[in-house]
Length: 452
Ligand SMILES: [Zn+2]
Image 1 (cartoon, rainbow, N blue to C red):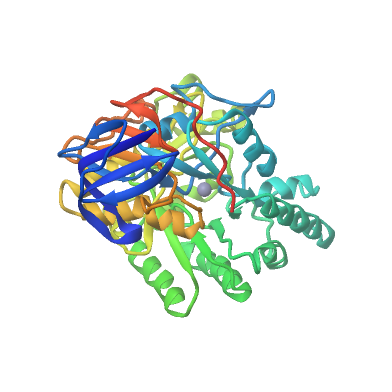
Image 2: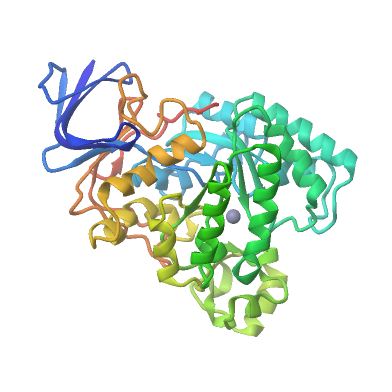
């Protein structure tokens, strides 16, 4: 069966393509890209629409596994929200976390299918706990580091696309542990991604800690969700520091989500003593997403009581400066990623809004070109994580395609309705098959593992 998507504006930054072209799909792959008309069994009229590679979200927290199966609620799962945004491939296992063994997770995706294609990072913290270093504030022993490193190596050999750290959440990590575990990546070409140890004024030392280790080992590096690390007045200096490492030969990039609030658990180290001073704010910046105070801003009393009673409660912290997020997203080394995390459909709207929002909030007002935006959503993340056949419409690539209306695409997810689906996305194909039509999921198990 041949499908022709004809008459659209095809944007494929991986091959520097931006023009009116027709895309022929056969056997789940891109068979031809041409200005000529071509014979097909099925034709999709894309006149007035943009046709581009399915979006790649390189910073996602995966849906849980329950009873050996993926959580697959078509409304509330992270992966379903991704698919409705036009994302066809996610890189999960970020910030050091895995919901189960990441190699097993890839196997489950292949056995059952998923809403989207899934690549996994080995999560350092997951293997840290397995190695017996259960106190996240205490250093691991040399023996534990060795155990972690062996397990990480095994995950990489099963196809994990890299290694993630959440140093913020495991302050006990020292240089020996960082270098010891990161050495598992040497010679693989796979990157380390990191949620840095500290943010705001302390972000510079935290950046150096991670990038100096990557540089020492010759490992490519990805600095995660920089808006929530340096979006408090440090962004210009932070990006200059990243540029200096790039100029010095380190292969390093960053990602950012287009919102000026971050989201994390109430019990996390982010809210340890000193956080009000760090962000120069009051308790009222903190919105609780679950429990008896859902949708409300905190007072000191609510904060203290709920942090003790309900430490896993999702929170949204409205503290970043919007102009700092703009500065990050317009920088050439920064790509888009959602940092999606959800619990039963509750959390931050970035999980269901990030990708359409970049076009609605940055491209339409003229702050970013459509071509650059598509690059940040396709070619850049696919290249950073070395995802074969993804992030491009070149002949032979997997036929993961999104067709959207550039004048209508927009996010509708909000902090009170975080899974509200976007508008303006006409068609999403995964491996050549229809996954979304007119904004609705029509097939939820087309996704497969992406192993590197
Ligand atoms: Zn993180």
